[in-house]
Amino acid sequence: MTKEKPHFSFWLIAAAGLAWNLMGCLNYITQTNPENVARMPEIYQLIIDGRPTWATIAFAIAVFGGAVGCILLLMRKQMAFPVLVISMTGIVVTAWFTFSVVGAVPSMVLSILIGAALLWYASIVRRFNWLA
Image (cartoon, rainbow, N blue to C red; front, side, top):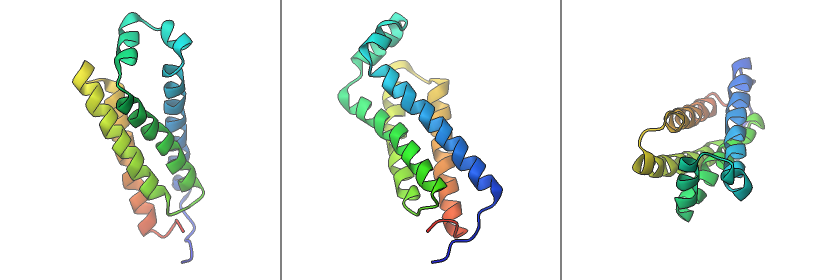
């Protein structure tokens, strides 16, 4: 299958998605470092320390999967779509846990919207034959 040349917006969207997910990776690393958590407000410490392992794993899948998916998009690989599906699954599980513990959190709603948008965009660029 020959790849078509993508529109310049493809690079902007994929790079912005990567930047967003790299911020999520940094957030994950920060939350898994006990010294960093100790410097956070008490309510954040309680939430992070009380988070079950499965929710922490879902968080890692969401952010690292999103970063890898966006890197694969930038490399114009078909594998980007299934990796972004896995990332979206992690986002949904993380959101479910977050909503059940603390209620609606604007950053979590934004994560769902951006994850869904990246997944939708990856499905479009596949149909445009921009990925191989």
